[in-house]
Image (tube, rainbow, N blue to C red; front, side):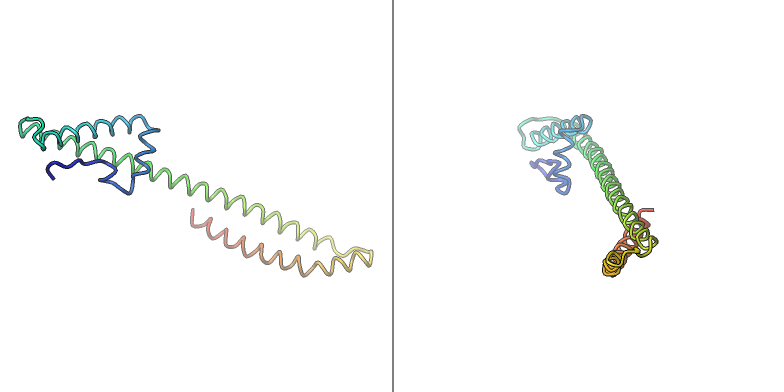
Length: 156
């Protein structure tokens, strides 16, 4: 449209936060963004009649603006993909840590079972009372472990 700015954040509103972050953190992105903004200002000034140039020059500016927008969009998509991959890696690492904790808990419970009952009758009574609780804990841990294993398979 004539006489309108094509701000990148307005053109790609779903990337507004990422655009801001990359302008601060990525010098290549910031350089391309600056070029895009300057060309957009120049096109606006020409279309508004503030500056006069040939139609060919205006068209070349518009083409350059589109090329820069495509390059910036590619960088935004790459950043988004890398961020999602990092988030998946973090999630997988959390699942692995939780899996290891559950395996250790189940091994500890199994060790308690293998130890058998104590010779002391009062200690044996406590062990028998705790057996149901340990079995419940083991069942819950085993269910959670199975759920985590399914989630980990999805990453493979």
